[in-house]
Image (cartoon, rainbow, N blue to C red; front, side):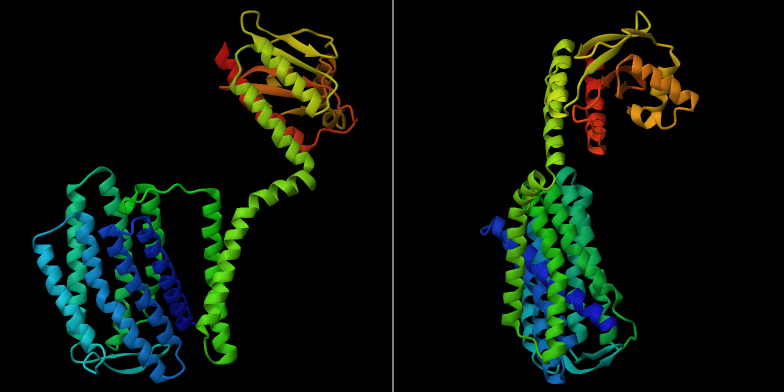
Length: 458
């Protein structure tokens, strides 16, 4: 199980690192910072993909080949990480000299990588059939690796303490991502020196692409300013679903056919990824079409709510508000009548301000009427037909009486800042149907907006 978790996390890291590297580079192909990030990302990709291939290899010769390949990436990761940090922070002087020395050492280790002086052999370790056995110069490589990484982190800490604002946030997230990634990667070295500890931190490396992506999005890391659209979000979410599918396809090929065809795997991935993009582009049009056909009523309610919202936003006069909303309720919801009662604080009563079709039997109700107390405490829309089922309850009986006196089938309280400032009464539907859940939801949303608008206008 440990082998498969390690392999999958390595493959995911390789894919995400390369994609993030290319994305950053495309944003500014001539920028030194962007090129440095691309080089770092590509080497992380080589290292991670080589590790994936090494641990799933079926023969020692194959595993040895991938070991040599992934160490090409591992050797250049420290130098390109330090190079990126130096450009990112604008560091020079001593840092530049260290870069020259580190560059020379990286090419020395690159040459030694293809000899037994670097990796002497492969041997079983923990649950892995093939793991590296270090050669005589490998400890020197470890020293080079950690010195470069440590110095780069020292620079990041140093500049983090000196800077402020946006740059400080950029450094903070980059520092967090790199500390998590390199701390996790360092656990890979334990098995190399025959310390029987599973490289549990390897999976932590997967945290670095999302953290960097977040820093790019929120704090314009690497001077990238992007606007995330819904379609983009859907595309990347689809991609995250596709990656595990690709891992499954790769392992399935090895399980059923004994080898992996990378041309076929790449073709499958491209087809799936393009499908995800096409899906994200057509999703909203398809949703709208389905809403208009299969869920026509719900779609119409959305349109009605949009109309009502526009009226409330442009609201200038009570009479105009009552007139326009009455028209929409009668036409779109097909109700027979409507009336508006608003609180008159000076008179201490709720006064009939407007109505359509049926005239309420009463035009004024005292503020201290128990009906309004219950309406305020409950704060919910009242449907008369529901209360009539339990008419034996004295409270329900009184509420039904009040609703009848206002010619109301549905009573919508207008509450803002804890005060009941009015209510809207709707009559029966012309179709004879009950008010649906969608109807009540629409009315509740409108009531919240209307209550605030009416109170602010007073």
